[in-house]
Length: 311
Image (tube, rainbow, N blue to C red; front, side, top):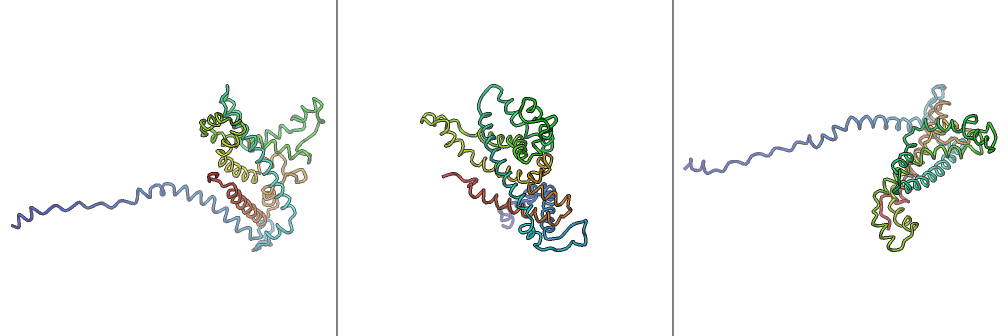
């Protein structure tokens, strides 16, 4: 009987192996070194700026170094007229530049989105300025605005203006001249992003609109623009932040002159830190610029309803 019971007893089910957690953690382990490096290169400078904004720190005057509290911020808002002038010009620069770049970029995207002979070449020419570095762009326009060999000399040859005129040294022409130079580099950015979004618009919508008798303007207003809303919001926000922090082009073209007419807040921060060695006050100005950009970005995204369908 015992032998029969032993034979009739069913075999024990095989043990399930515990699923190893390593495969799930492997992607995080692989990206950990790069993430730590990025954190170090980004977090440390940001924390340092916040720290030095509360300090009096000037390597050339070490006897004045020490904790300052909020004195740097109070000085910026109440005793430094240059801060307000540069902040006002920065806002003017961003509004004019981003507005014009969006307008011309949208127009170029609509043009190169059409079917015509040589469209590939046209797109390459439109997008090529974006591949040029900021310093090289500045060097090109410095040569174009040169009073001896640039545009003004050829205009003087045909009777427009006078010889030796420099648009970058005249307070009445330096702002438009700088605007044109940065437009050449910034317009392709909008054209690229908007064209990429235009490719996803269904042609059936336009065909249905034509059947209903909608004009080209009505199609653009009711079909194209609503579809491009998120692309326009994102591109304008990114470009506004970049233009606010624009240093290379204005520094190379004008150096903030003449008479401080083209000095933006980042240029003023650079002068305060690099030339005057007042790193504490420059850090405070950088913190103020960071807060302004963060606040304006949040308000802009909230008002534009980015990522939400229009009702």
